[in-house]
Image (cartoon, rainbow, N blue to C red):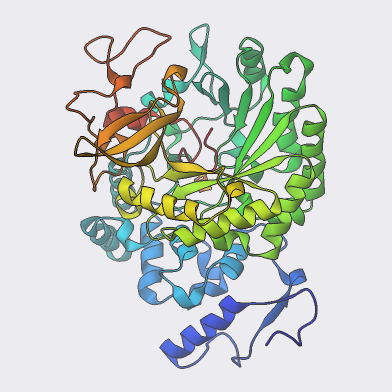
Length: 509
Ligand code: SF4
């Protein structure tokens, strides 16, 4: 069927599928005079990143392909949960014949079930009929607060202090790793509907934290020789042009920071806008920047946020991986397990396998966090374990660098190792992969099996114990004196984590 097309030509299957969808539903294709197969060459791929948002999505031709009820849901729910699409995602990643169930459609566009039924109806009344901006803003704020954003005061939990003053835009949760949030990287190529960092994008300024320059970071690092890793995160630092990004990275190459061995960049661009590494006008400059970091003796680790195998099927996404690794940088693949988007273990297996073939390293499958529309996206831990297990069994040893399913919880990263039976009791076997207290790492512990639990704070210790080992000792609140800092798991504490960009996704340390 493709045999007569010239080399370098890609058949736009999605568009063909849409034709059939429209024909099925409307009996005609309203976009074109004919329903002929349409082919595009790689030269016709979008050349410049142009985000579509609630205000501009109607300009995208795909908007006409959405049934009215989906358009309405997008327009209404995006008051609460903003979205960002771009031409590449609309053209290459979404299968429009399968909306609204297509995984990338679900990832990109808000859906009515992301709000509670009453919330949706109230918003609908306000937006479509009353058109009262103040009332809309009030309702939107109330829904967002119900969705567990990071309360401002609690965001300070991991923020380092010098002379008792907090360093804005820095977090230091684990001994060896400092997170840095450059101000111009606090937006993203995507606004994933499940994003853990969504307060960063919705103008909840008191819940945002960022840094305008690297001066304080460098001073802090000079005084903390035990820090080996700096994670530059957001949002997405690769939303910056190369010159701006270099201003944040190059100070880290100074000889007095020789103890900084690893510089990590958390990004969704590898999946959502791979042009950043291949055809953007400063993509070659970006590759030269990566090479300079490597030549300076650092390990540059790109922490790529991937959600689905389709994100690594296109030619340009594969070229992006190859270009990144050709600079000497490494690319690690990570992402959360999300209901409606990537519950199929075959998708994970394909993603990891393709990534390994191209030179990337499977790194983390995260458990979706307790924030935003988590009622819509969360999967029980037991199911998450089954999916990880099934995917893991499908791949060779080279892909088994991946860890998961892992919760980026307040005390640290907790992985579900399995479901076991001890003395007739069904249990989750767990361990810390990373922890506030390094002594906790790789220490197995057990929780009662609960088929409905979706997060660490839902779990109960096994063997009749009242507390997990990392909650015991110390004062009546479960706290101990440093360095063996013990923090109780509680919903409030979970909310306080604020440790990583997309804590469960692309930038996790
Ligand atoms: S999950 Fe990551 S890629 Fe998605 S919007 Fe949040 S910061 Fe951006």
